[in-house]
Image (cartoon, rainbow, N blue to C red):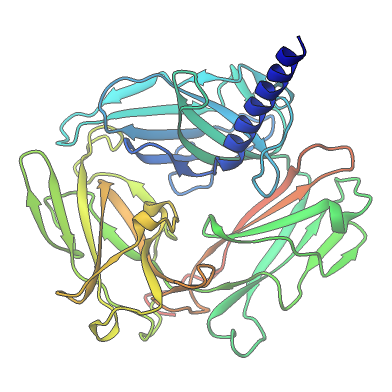
Length: 431
């Protein structure tokens, strides 16, 4: 009997450790199977938005993705509540989900017209049958056959309970080295709707540039606390490199080749698109033009439904380094929402010594894409540089997220959300 109890104890601990490790290893905004493409989650009707809904409101999000297996599968989704740093909260799902914790994605269409066969799945969330009841960060998990161990992909979404007001502006840093190349966010947060005993510890702020999480700024204290107002105006916080307006690629029609396309191969069952080589732009004068701030839009110029009637093509990208010589201490990445803002080894560009260019290719759906090139230090991957340079004048979108956790809370509440543009003017072609 004693040996059975010991075996049972070890088995329970093994199962606990297994699922704990699985939860910790599960990253937000990741695709875990090769057949999934073009995963999108955005505010209803707005492809260029961040997936944020207000608590206890009628706000809705659109979820879209394609399965290149082109068959019918049973996809389900659920929510995982997280803290402000995206670590999972260890509480029962029924404490933050009302209704069913697992919901099936039942809306799908087979692709038509397109050479590439796929099944398009879509859902409007939250569904009335199961929805979040707490504010905060959530990971949307999509998985197969009602089995949460068969994860297909994850996406971030946020539920905000607006109880804090945010005022912000973008200014030039005073530091001489950063004055012409960086942008500083100066802002205040009014938490008069919160009964905070120690606001400096209980309130956390995260700043995003162009909805990106890979370079988010966080874990900095307020400069001053005046009553219910938290001021963040120190010279050494909220500083981002300005970057440059994003490069663009128009493949809304594979046959009406845009300015960026060098040539294309139209095969019986596939399309190959070869782009004109790109070079560094950091030595050029800043030019303003409207971009999508690194994002993309699925669309077609021929009036096809972009969800299931548009096609896929293998798009070849080329980057020509200065003097045609490979960077000895840097890895080069194609970067933007089209690569999920990822620096995975599989997305690293390869230098072709015969052509003296960096090369890579992606399978992309018809649409309009923003992209850039990033150089990552081989010895210190935390050091990254945009090869197009940094300019204070660049138009960027900034988002401020305010979290609060009382001494009795078991998770961080999202109590404030604000998005604003670094440019308040209406510039022409140049600044």
